[in-house]
Image (cartoon, rainbow, N blue to C red; front, side, top):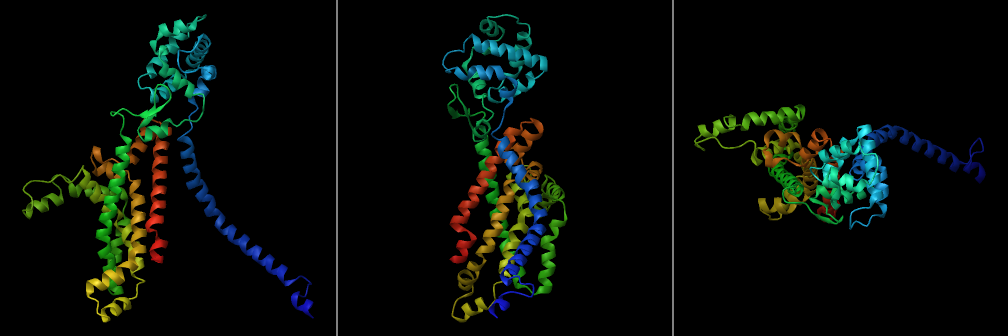
Length: 413
């Protein structure tokens, strides 16, 4: 009797049937989610992985100067290489001149030693006429560049297809004459300031959107549904307009004889037009306008779920309006504040169009330099290194935020 209850009419145990049903359910769920997973893999994970790889991978010298890089394996880096290495260099230069790859070699070496690109090309052209040795004296006579240890240290580092140069350059460091890591010259040390500027602008915009968005979110959560719905339409209305159009509108509003300056002068607040554009003021104002809904909406969603009875209970127990708000209502909004500020801050780190249109030369963020290296100089390794540094910094800041004042910690508090 027990066996009949545990089984079924076809003698298959009920436990086995349940396992089959569970497997089919899981398979169906995986099948439904699989297209999204593939999209994320190819459109998000794969480009990021490629960027991280490009930031440390550069096999230009290894591929285009194979004899020289191989011959330098035994070089101690102190004195000049011997005749065998110079002979290998002569052969590589001849081949590069014949295959028209001297430009690529010069461009790669010019990254680390500015000004040597044209010398590489002229050396290859003249080396193509060399038929017999000794090559060491001949190449040094062609160009004194080949009597400098810096160029040979660079070629020796080219033995590996992986390099830390671009990551070092992204934080204003570089390789020295003996392959030691040294600080970049002050004239070239710009990226740390750019990263700090990006961080500062992002923090400023996040603070501005919080100050502007919190009262509006509270108003939306407190008003009757009919009125709050109308105001909510006004809040999300910017989403219906292109980012470029909104930024251009701020150019019209903030320009020297724009609407804002004309209004301030008409009200006799200022006597002459203020500089509101192509500076930090215009950048922060335009970015705050664009990012305001991203900070406001998470705060509103949390406020909407706070029962009004909490404040009434605090007031009935003798708390004043401000004390009740600060001690009872405000702590419950912290998860929304944390989520909105984190979302806005991360989005601000990658801004490009708005600072480019309304900011000045000293207001350009790191994304502007990424675009420059990608589109103008075609130095994808440097662009990838800057992007990798920014991504790492973002993940690190998120980790620290989550550990110190994360949403889970806020709820536990």
